[in-house]
Image (cartoon, one colour):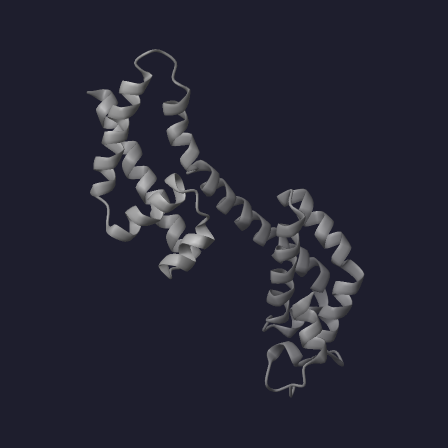
Length: 193
């Protein structure tokens, strides 16, 4: 854990950082370091079971340790292990919610119908729907349209687009989701006519 190793080797005055305030004769960082050594494997297994991803489990665990170090209430330090697992469980639930939103708004779902529809009129119908999508995209602001096109049609990752456009990953996900919603609404309108 990079955060814990930095804390263990840092030269701070206890008054500078609440994480380094003494609690029952020990520094908070020392308590958290001990907690890491004694319970990190169990915490990672717990998070992998929730998230089904070792990498995400490691990230969530690290964030949980950081939050634990930032505790203002020194009395909570006596319940460190329980509090650590509680923090980690809450962070895991947040990750799962974000994952569900991303999966729910997956661009492939919207266009899958276009690609799998059988029959000789598939090309004509696909062309008509593509024109509807193009018209819908013209209604969007430039940044939103560009992020969507880069992601869906050119296959760039959210991170690549964020770096290219000098925006946050979150903003790119927002743009892509917004564009998908607009396209879906326009396609639904044409189907109901």
